[in-house]
Image (cartoon, helix red, strand yellow):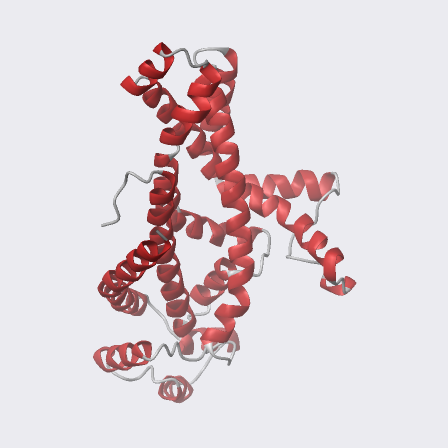
Length: 326
């Protein structure tokens, strides 16, 4: 079983290489179509700059080369997994990404677990209480949460829980000045993560509640459920042993598809809460025209989406052994 899953994952990774190469090439072309470059940013920060200074900056960082030359050099470096240096930070892009990757993964995994767990529980409850007041309450609340802008809700939470009540820190990942270590540091990070993880997971929670409710109701009407009920099984046994296991499959599928949307939402959430992850780094890279850093971020996000979708397919097979690995 495990050997076949490992072979499937390896085969999927190999099949994803042409897609990844195409995404990398497209990212380079699109990023270079944007107006302005590092020289323009430095000139703006200085207030003014001579044409000679601008030309010197572009020559120093290879920005004066034709686009096709820069593209070929970039693809050659990517073939060697060399992401280059960050113009703004003056350090290798790989080092920057690794330093900011784990805060984003921590935030995303926490938000996903919260959203998936809450979505399953509330979706099952709504389906079991269909057309009754718990179903209406859950459905309306999910619809409101789904339609509420992430950045606005984040700002409102900061105003309420940080400014007015003073219960939670308004920004950052931890209190660096306190110098906490061990368990005390972990608790400090957990407290800082409550608001951003809640905001990031709220959109997914609303989506999963609606999806789980619809899936439960659909599976409940299938023939095998009628057969189980005719054999005298109780409603709880039918719901949790038969219906739930089949109804949760669309949730797993959508989980992999929603990772890209969550990465986009991380940019807003990490910016609002000053969370030191990839989203905030991407925001900085765009506005400072740090092309190497931006392309490195797009590359690692593409890899994350591919890997998570492969993991989703494997999870799908583990939940339902009847599904073949192709």
